[in-house]
Image 1 (cartoon, rainbow, N blue to C red):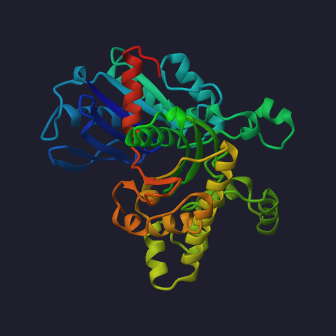
Image 2 (cartoon, rainbow, N blue to C red):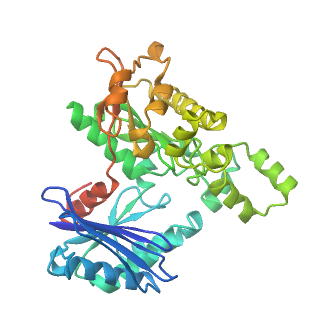
Length: 402
């Protein structure tokens, strides 16, 4: 069985075609600059790669080009659409409507569109992609939608509610939703398989760290709390996002600068975090290079993120009443030796003993980085959100229970 996985943005459409018989990515690529001019990059498992300028007035033309690349020319990997069993779509915001992945009916697509006010930069683009996909591949190819927020729908009200008037929750659906759910769900289940223990018997803190970062308490396979909130802006400091901040500081800054709500949103999401602290560096690799060169602000940014991770590990262990393991994943989680070291330093009293040789040797790799006698295990587990989307898609079209 072959599943096409789609991650659509307002001007982009990333795709992977996965062979579910062996989990191999047969082909992948990205359609960029949709609605502007257009460019596609297409790569296959055999090593073929091509980049072409295209005309992508809408997502429909982008989907048509994807199918063309998959089925014709030197980058061909299937003979026709008929070989694609289903399409799985990543959706950012499912609100409190969707607690699991579902088959994409017209009603479901309409509901995703209705949730657009909660994710104005993402859900409208997902809806465009869903409708464009159906137009191109037809009704015979089923589509499934997999939500970033769904995994966190198991959070109790004490974790997802804010200290606002209850009417704000009832009228405007203001609450913590959490994001990166597919990643947290994947690595927690994958970790359990690696150590040969049932997921429903484990208490984990999963740290998805990248340009966007979130940390989740996974108690017996269920998310019970997470750092991202109403939007992905909340939580720990990130590449360009400020993370958690006193609301009064935002109001004060708006008063002093005269920024509008839209301008402030752009500021907090795109001009803060690592970028704002260091004067323009948002990529952790640049932060590490700055630290090596003696840049104190790069050092500060690293220390801030590491400190926040450490605090969340402690907080979530308390919330769950115990902790079996800490799992690092994502671009930073899998590749930043220093951040893992700082986050887990001086935690022996807590049962965490990092093995620095393992932490260094397994960088860019995977495996256990805590000592053999550490009561709490610490691991690097690579995430694979696309595979999880494909797995959910396969399960649903085969009428299996998620």
